[in-house]
Structures are given as structure tokens and as C-alpha cells.
Length: 216
Image 1 (cartoon, rainbow, N blue to C red):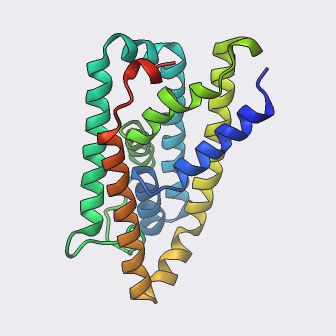
Image 2 (cartoon, rainbow, N blue to C red):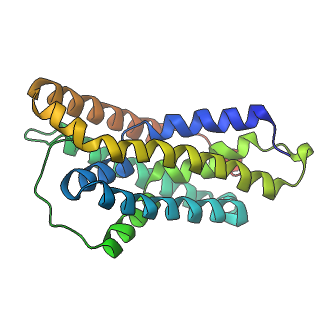
């Protein structure tokens, strides 16, 4: 039986993660703006499938693999930091484009929208770290079946993330129009997002927490 404190803790972690600009937000916003809310919703379904994959892997042995092979944890961490740094550069470089800027993209069919949403989430280092190192901290071995707690708390995270992302999908078009009429705000949003992504990349790359302490 999971306690209220664990649920609130995971909810706070999930909110912090989903509200931080990253690959999922960028993909969902771009598709919602160019192809409409329905395309954004299909993409979000793919993101949800990615959450389920990570949840199952983390609870059924991913943490044990990282514990047994610390070098793998380091490689995943550095790869994630590099990916975030690349996204930060795309936002901050001269001529960079805001995630909310309207762009011409080739419309994708539903199957590709779903697949790209799935892959974007699976390649998102924030999600891997959350399932391997953050959520397990709220599991209480004395409160019952550890595996069930892991899945239940992961379910809380998925529910929070999908709710917030759905709001982003619904509002993306309106936000894009609002910012398009205010070029200064559009630049500010780009620089803020790039700075946050860069800070996350540096934090992730310099984190000296060993795999043995996070693979719970």
C-alpha cells in the first residue's frame, strides 16, 4: 500500500519533469502546431507507450543491470547530457527557432506520429533517470509488495505527465499565435528554454552520484 507522502512526492517529481522543456514537449508542440490537436494527441499516445516501456523495464530489472554494470550507467548519463546540450544549442545558436514558432513540416500519418512520439520518449534521458533513480526513492519496502508499489507510483507519474502534456497539446496553437504577435517574447522563450536545457546537461554530466546509489 503506497502512502500519501509517496504519491505527493512522485506527483511533485512528475510535475517538475514534465514542465521542464525537453524532447517530449518540443515534439508534441511542433506536431500540434503544424498538424493540429489530433496529431498532437496521437503523438502523445506514443509518448505514453514510452512511459509504459520505461516503467516496466525499471521495475523488472533495468536498475539491476545498471547496478551490475556501472559503466553502462555512466554511458547513458553522458549520452543524455550530450543530447540535452545539443537541444540547448539548437535553441541558443544564432538563427535558432523557438519551439512555439510556426514552421512548415511535412504532415506525418498517424502511425508515424505514434512511433516518433514513442522514440522521442525512449530517447529522453530525463525519463530514464526518473524511473531508475527518482521514483524508487519513494518505494517503502515495509509497506508491502515492492514491485506493485513501483508500478503504482509509476502510474501516478504517467497520469500527471499525460494530463500536463495534453494541456500543452490543446494550448500549443493558441500559445504559438500569442507569441508570434510578440517577437520579443518569442526570443525570450527560446533563450529561457535553451538555458534550462544547457543547465540540465551540465548538471547531468557533472553528477558524480554512483550507479550503486541510484539503482534501487
